[in-house]
Length: 105
Image (cartoon, rainbow, N blue to C red; front, side, top):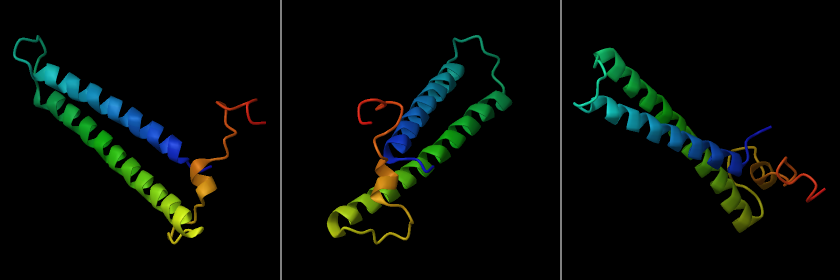
């Protein structure tokens, strides 16, 4: 099943939190008063992790933007002019997931 808009936003939030934590760790690593043995390899590991998370974030943002375009097209025209084969229901979901169990059944 494709991710809903809410799923994509959840994943973006998690990616942001991961990025903040790794950037904090990198800043702490660079402080002169800490006892870390500073190596080029360790610094490169931090940069690689940051780069990987940023690529994930950019992909999620692109997916969210595409989803919003489908929704706006649907709201304005009643149909999607997008080249994606998604519908507004695919993006928003049906409201029957584990969080709504029993409420909407």
